Every structure is written in C-alpha cells, then in structure tokens.
Image (cartoon, rainbow, N blue to C red; front, side, top):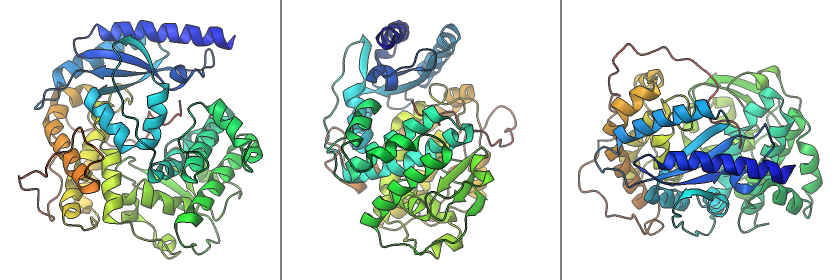
Length: 445
C-alpha cells in the first residue's frame, strides 16, 4: 500500500507541476518534503512543491507575474485540496539559500524530485555546525508548539526525529543530515539516545523532555552552565520578527509536567538552555525582550555576527514569495525587511543592534495586508532593497561563501544608526486590527 500511495502522490504532484509550468515565469517544479523523500501516508500527507521561476526583474521582482501565479495556485488548490506549500525560488535564490543554510539545504538538495520542467544545478555545500545547531531551536520554536497543542503523536514523532537529526550533525555523529525520517530513526538506534527517541513521541511531555534534553547537551558543549531555574516561568510577549505574540513557557528542567499555558495557541516551550541556544543561533532579537529573571541565570548577549547570521537566515529571498504560496497571511516579509533595515547600520559598524523603538515595533506589528494587497502594492516596493540587504549581509558574514553572488559593498549610504524602518505602503482601506492566530507554516511536513 505504501508504494502505491507514493506513486499516487507523485503522479498528483506531476500533474500539479505540469499545470504550474504553463505559467509564463515557472521554469520547473519539484516535489518537496514527504513526496520528494518518499514518505507519505495516504489521505494524511499533503503535496508540497518547489517552483523554480525565471530570473526576476531587478526593479519589480516580477510582482505582477507573481500575483497572477498566486491566483493560479488558488485555483489549483480548489481542484486539489491536498496541494499545500509551494516554495517559490529562482535559480539564483535557491543556490543562495542553500549556501546560507547548509544544513537544510543539504536535505533539500538530495530529496527534491523533479516533476516538471528542466532540472537546475544546486550547490553541494559542506554542512556548517552552526547551521545544524540552529535547527534544534528552530524545530522547537516553529513546530513543537503546534504538535503539543494538538497532542498529535504523529507530529511529535516527526519533530523528535528531526531534532535528533540536527543534534547528531551538530555533535559530529553524522557529517550531514539523514534525508528521510526512517533512515534517521535507524541510525539513531546505533547511538545511546536511540531508545529514548523511540519512546519520545508518545505524548507532549515525553517529546518535550527529549527535545529539551538534547538542547541541554548541546548547550553544555557551547556555553558555560546557567544557574538553575526553580519554578516554571510564563510570559506573554511579542517575539518578532518571525512571531507577533507568543506565550513563553520556560520549564526549569526536562521532564517536568507541562503547565496549562503550554497548550495555548502561540505557546513556546523551552528550558533556559534551549532559550539560550535560540538567542545565539536562531533569534538574537529575543534578547531585546528577555525577562530579567531569565537574564540573571547567566545568559550571554548575542554578538553582531550572530545578528548577521540571523538576518541572513530570516531574509532569504524566498520569504518574499511565501504569502499565498506557503502562508495564508502576508505580514511577515515586511516585518523581516524592516528588522534587517533597522539592524544593518549597526552591524556595518560592528555593533549589536539595540532594541527597536517601541513605537516603530508597534507600527510593524499592526501592519497586516492581505495576500492580494501584498503582491499588488507592497512586494515591488521592497524587492530591490531586499536584494541589496542580502548583498550587504553576505559581505558582513563571510565573503566567499556566496561566490555566485558576492558583490563589493554598496557605495550608497545606508540609513543612520538612529533611523527606524520606513513606514509600510499604505493600503486602500483601514488596517485590520492585529489578530493573534496560529501561523500557517507551523506543521512539519
């Protein structure tokens, strides 16, 4: 049945890919995630694709054509509700992203399955340890909360497996990530933690305990020990740029009972060690709002280079094409754009960006365009500057990692360090009030 299911899903992916390739800017389509890796569950798995588009216009980024493609995708989803996420890259941006995130780029390079159009070359980049470490707090931040809230054993098993995969690469157990979850679980059985992984996905408490234990071991290799937290801490706070509002639940140690707020929408579970890893490898902006009772445990402040790496990771330019293709909302690209614009003047002078002024942050969090408004009015206005930001960040991070795109530092002047992000483009109607809802990209594929 599994082989028949896989053939059915890949046939459906091929049909969707052929339909997408009829659009003027789409050059090829790949099956991604489970369908690409060969891991599907009939009736439960979605079809995720990666569409490779032509080189965008340098001024507009092909905004009108992307809007037309978005409307076409809406029609395809009505015809096939299993069609889910569609990552949209051009060939240069895919190459660029795989150099920025060598860990997940390694998985995608070996698992994306061509279903329509012509193949494109992708770089074979050695996996950097820091990229593998990043995915430990990333999985915890983006995917574990939803699985815990839904008490989904299937997704908890996925997340614990993926977290072990990134932990194994970060610890040097493997030189590159295993492509499939089946292979990951088989390889884990050869390690002392394998039996724990087998039992970790049985429920929210066991899965959370396993992931926090891995984070603790990783933290012990990278940082001095933190002081111990005695009781859980619950904070309701904004966590931009990737999240607007979260319920931060800090557990004193792995294995403790999960308090009720852990099951609320937009929760984020962490031990102090996991949170400390996140600040240094995934979201240094969290340091701006870190509660003092956590900072007093011995948290170190992130360095300018860690901010550069985070801005590059957040700013990979397929994020510009997430609205409507991966996410049902459209606020994230401008928020990331504004955070990078605010941070760059400090980073160019070797400084750590101070917290964004509260008024500017509040304005960003209220900006809430629809996907239609985004592609028709906002996308083109930030595309060119977004590309300039990436060039600046790449030159700051490590010239030479991006040989296809590395350019001399821009000669134009950047905003002064006292500047705040430019206001978002005006919409045709009054901005909607901010609604805190579960983000649409938080289920692991």
